[in-house]
Picture 1 (cartoon, one colour):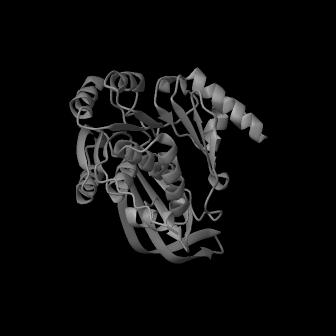
Picture 2 (cartoon, one colour; picture 1 turned 90 degrees about the vertical axis):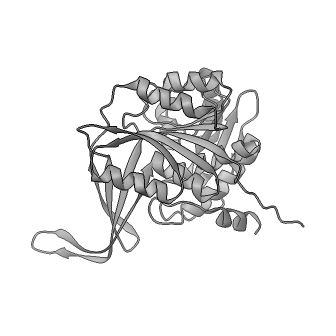
Picture 3 (cartoon, helix red, strand yellow; picture 1 turned 135 degrees about the horizontal axis):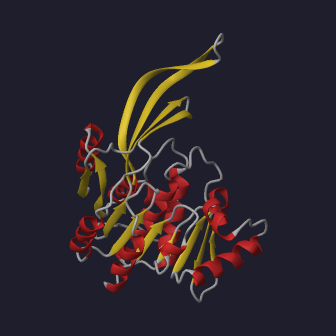
Length: 314
């Protein structure tokens, strides 16, 4: 049987969303100060990488796609670091520096492959000049085949309806990793990719498979979506499409070391595959493989094209 090799070298994907600087402080082990019941970790290594929408862009770059990112950073050293990190991994960036604002930064303290604590700096970006952001999107969209809106509820996508409308007029698919309890603002998008917890917050508790299927189909109709992909951790992923029967993709790996950033990997692979010409069903199939790889890694990690093709051909 001939091996199937995929490549996303011609995938042109535009990412717009909340940029975060992810920092990892690694300790080989930690101990407790018994008199204070306080954990003490000796930091041996520090790693910094793009997080949030930046991790989505990084995933696209790692699987060979061509990506540009539009978003906000603060007027600080962390913002400069984030720009350099994006440039280093060959991601085109068109960022707005928000004055008197800090770049959203998350520090995770990791020991023995476990996250002990996460420290968050800056809750969200305070930015009201949507026209400035909108112009950057208009000027870029015509050069790309798929648009990802990466919503981490940090303030960048405060007028998401207008961006969806713009892309629809240009016949460019819009894929959204949603956040919060109001999905109506995402109406008209091509695809939403909530995890199961986010899905239940919108449609209510689902104890049986039949409830998931019924509510998924209903949500696609209510929001006028082309598709809805619910990622379900060890239970795989379920794709709902307008006018079609749901398709379930069983989890390939039942072992999950860390699901941090897995949603970024899923939407990145789907967007890259769609931009290459694959169908939505094929794109979700590849994304399911990518998710099975990334959840076995610690922290906000990515999948590269070699890993994807290796698992695909086993």
